[in-house]
Amino acid sequence: MKRAPGRTGALFFVYARYMRRFALGVLVLAVACRPASPNFRPDNQVIVEEVRLEGFDVLPPDVREHLDDALPLRAGVALTDETQKAAGERAVELLQNNGRPYAQVGIVREPIDQTRSRVIIRAEPGPLGVFGAVDIAGNRRVDDRIIRRRLAYAPGDLFRRSAIEQSQQRLGASGLFKSIAIRAHDIDAQPAAVPTLVTVEEGSPWKWNVGAGYAAGERLAVDARISHLNVLGSARRVDVLGRVSAIERTGEVFFTQNDSWHPSLSFTLQARHQEIEQPAFFVTSRGGQAAVSWQWTRNLSTTGSYAVAVERSNVGSSLGPLLGLEDGMLSAWSLDVDHRNVRPDSSVADTVAIHFEQAGQWMPGTFNYVSMIGDARHYRSRLDGKVVFATRLRLGTIDPANGEADVPLLKRFFLGGSNEMRGWGVYELSPLSASGEPVGGKSLMTASAELRVPVFKRLRGALFVEAGNVWQDALSLRLSELRYDAGPGIRLDTPFGLIRIDIGYQLRPLEGLRIDGKPQRSRWRIILGIGEAF
Image (cartoon, rainbow, N blue to C red):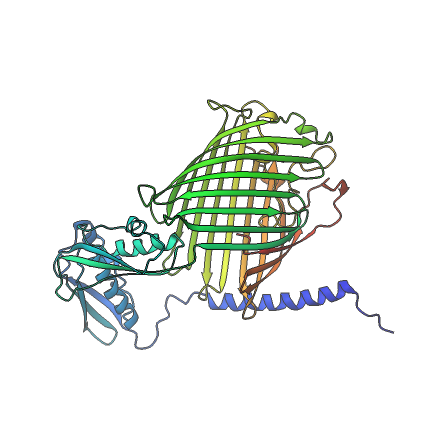
């Protein structure tokens, strides 16, 4: 008599079928991304022998110096209709970005033989132009002044096509509009002052989002956010956020004034209440923060802020290293630098964020430390974004001026949960007390790599591996003590957002870890969340 398969056998059968599909997807990706041989050349392919540029003398010297590299057509590349079209569009763009709004470009092929051709790119730059009057249409609740402040040009400025594109991006970043169109009008006579019409379609100023997730230690967590993007019609923004789980209760209110004297400048006021309840400690933090942000370019921004909070902690006697913790006032200033870079085709994206914070010193308060955290992420996609390889590296340290009492508990580092080191639950990966309870540390490192591939129409698979740890001392990094985890995941695209399920397995467990006062029983953790981990 055969024995019916148990639950474990059934789960293994489903898991094996899923991993077989995942492996097939990886194999297809490897074949699709395999580079072609450098000696491979299709039959009847014509190669550009020489490129001649005519009519571009009106461009500034520094632009003309790099003109050959800026155009897709150059000696040695294949001459195709697509490459020729791209070169023409790029040439027109360069002229229009340097004050020639009515520029036209023609491209002529002069065959040399069956496999080689000479290309002449001939420009008709037209007259020099500036921006003229700006008309605005379609807005009902948003004041004209808000739209004009976000424009990257003003009447009288030298005409630049890039200024129109930058203006569309600035207006889109406000979240106030469903659609934005900026175009020159009444240009048949080619006026020297080019008038533009800004047409917008407003969206609802109310935005809301509710999400839920599950992670070991935290169990079920619910997040909610309600925002109004246009308070009193002046692009003032109010956000109310909340999070409730078995270990955390957090509420925040943000007030943001955008376009303060300059479209790149914004002010933010924040009020916050947070409670963290663990078996070994209970912490509360109540306070606020004022911040000033400046958007230097589309990719680079900086934020300076000052925060004040009242910190309270109740620590169990088993946590020996933390007995010196104090209650008191946290007074700190911080500086954040964010840089984002995305290729025009979105095939590669990079983000780098650096946070520097100092408490105490010349400021009033109980706590006294210096902290720095860096976060770098890289995304590379293939097959029109269907396959993504994502990596992340995070480093951090916090250095107290004297001892443990100079760092509040909520500023100490912990790892684990739904976004990094998924083989551990929330707050589970850190230095341990003598009784095996996580106590947090003052140095952190974590690195993650994840491959995301399509499985079905709305279903994608993922495979991740992570390394990281938290150390007790500041400025401490011992690679021999890194912990590792890995596992599979699935991603389901729904009308409500991306639903993520990850299964993390500890490849190198943390010896002596106790959870809820008991030794760790399982090296598996199951994560259910909304959106990607990073």
